Length: 362
Ligand code: FES
Image (cartoon, rainbow, N blue to C red; front, side, top):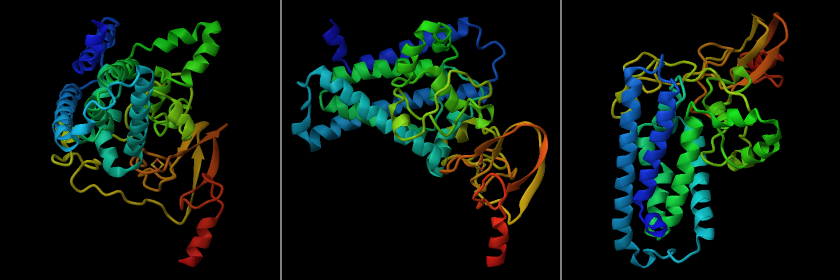
C-alpha cells in the first residue's frame, strides 16, 4: 500500500494540497483573515499563481517524460533500483541547492527580480504567499524541472518523499501559525532548536527574509534564500539567524501594481507611475559628488549603497534586482551627520571627502 502510494508521482501533488488546506484552515480558524490587508488583486494573484504553477508543473512533467523517452530511451527509469537512502538525499539536496541559487539570482538580477517581486509585495504572511510569483518565474523554476527529471529517471518514491518534506517546510515557513515561536519559549529545547535551525528553515528564518527592511534589526530581505535547508545560506554567507519575527512586510516602495501585470510581465506591463514592471521603467543613478549633512533621529538607519534610491542618502528599496544591499547603522541620540552620497567613501556610510578627489578628477 505505502509502496504503491510512493510510486505514484501524483501523491506529491495531493500532499501539497492537503498541507496547504491544513495550514490554511489553521489560519482561518485562528482568525488571521479578520482584518486582512489583502486586496482583491492579492487574492486573484495568489489563486491564479497557484493554478499557473500547477499547470506549469504538469506541462514540464509530461514534456520531459515525452521527450526523454524519445531522446534518451535508455535512461528511462535508470535510477529506479537505487536505494532510497541514496535517492532521497540526492533528490532533496539537488532540489534545494538549485532553488537557493534561483531564488538568490531573483534578488540580484533585474530581470528575475521583476518576476519574483510579487512574492515580496505581500504585506502580510500566510500560506498563499508562497504562491505569489509571475508565470515566467514558475516556468523556469528549477524545482519543477528537477521533479520531472527525477520521475523520468525512476526516482518516484524519493521525489514523493522530497516533495512532502519540502511542502511541509515551505508552507509552515510562510504560515501565520509560527510553530517555532511556541518551541522557543521552552528553555530546555533551545539547544535542540539551535541544531534544527542550522539544518532546516524555520518560520523565524524565513520571516526575516520577508521583513520589509533591515531597519528593524530582525529582517534581511537580501539573505535567508534557502527553501528547505539553511545549509546553503551558511555556506554562501547569506544566513541571518533570529528568533524574533518582523512586524512589517512588503516592499519599501510599492506602487501597488494590478494582478495581471504582476503575473504576466513582460507581456502585460503596469500602468502605475514609477513601477519597476512599467513600460518606461529605467533604473537611474541618483548619486552626487557632495556629502549630505543631515540631522538624524536616534535609531537604525539604512544608507543606500546602490546609488539608485530616490531618497538619498537613505535606502528606499531600489537596490532589489542588483547585488547591492543597504548598510544599516545606529545613531545613539539625535545628531547631525555627514553621509556619503558619491558612494565611494571608504568610511561608508560616512563621508570621507572622497567626493572632492572625484570632483578634481572630473
Ligand atoms: S536603495 Fe537600497 S541600497 Fe540603494
